[in-house]
Length: 575
Image (cartoon, rainbow, N blue to C red; front, top):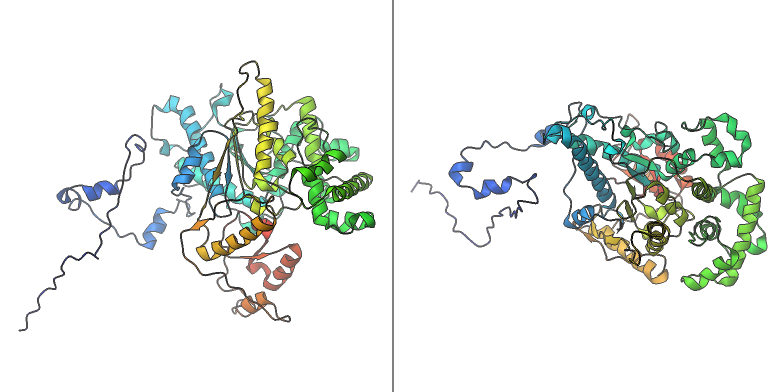
């Protein structure tokens, strides 16, 4: 009666054993075959007795992910099927997706794959099929005679913070791909990148004979403009201000003087609203918001691309007033007439003050590129992230640097995130621009080769699976989107609702009484004895609406927390 009998469980239907289900297509994946399926499908005597198993603890995993110099290795993660399709699609394409759906991932992965293919192509001659992963950067020299032996790719985005994050990511992936896991280039922190052009001082301000190591080039749109300007014979800044010419040498990265000069003389939305707006004729400006007028001027009057006369740099009054019939708009003819009057007043005031806005710079580049041609390096592939931050004329500048129209462009963006001041953007517009400005002009030049062929408009892809956040937040975002679709049907592209992988509660709203500050309530008490905020790392961020609010919050929390405006944080990711 003292015996203990081992328990016996009868096999029940609710005990499930998961078998890893792998359908391996041999010819597709002959290089990367996951061996885990072989382990389960082989005979027990062959596999389990001969294998030693190690438990994958967190320490072990950390060890595997650490480079020789102690920095973390960037490893490309697995892509979903829809992402894979986009990356393998050979022609120019447009990618739409709300934030967090993997647009930037697709762009960077495509860029890295192109880099590796080009590397294999140029090295294959010498290596006789050696293992690529053993290469380090010393062997990756372009061939001496063939200048075209490496692929030239440019990644452009508007926001400097996003740009430097992507730059780091790409260099990490490149190191991983070439098997070089040491020699980490300087790690940049979000706090450090305050100024746009400081980041890019090591890249020369022109496109002529850029050395191999600068590619793939990851730059902001402003740097791209400066480089184009440096490539032209006459600089926009020479023409504008003779007095400046002596202060810098052409071609080298421009001196600090120019930088401060641009800051002084450029009309941004803030400057427009504070200095120009109050001085306009009050009869014209009443009933308008400054931002509406600024958007109309920048996006439509000065930013619309006309094929008939693309280099005038602005729409005529009749053309502009006619827009009210063309697109669903809250501005009727009479309002547009008034806006055009404000525009003329703005231009003359700007001329007197010897100031300029970004559109003047862009239009001047268009006219000098048309008159004297482009003499810099031709780029093979152009990737643009957050394309909705650009006007049509700004996008049209890209056709001068990349002739590979059929397959060289990849645009990613989301019109629901058009929060850059002065930009009004729809994907239909960019597709028609691509059709008129890019394709039609190359067709015209190739007319002898093929006539009567219809120009193929490139494909639109939509990413709908969200990897960044959970369903609670997605549902709230979707409810806001449906309001936008309802009230502003023509300003936002309608996409399928996003799907999330994780269930989650709706976000929490903290209402604070008038006299207390919610941020202070959360963070004010938590200062430890050393005066540091507990648990506030680079993984967390406080988002504010504008620079004024940012200043307030920084005064409260100091350097311990990362505080970004909505415009600055777009495209970045935090825990």
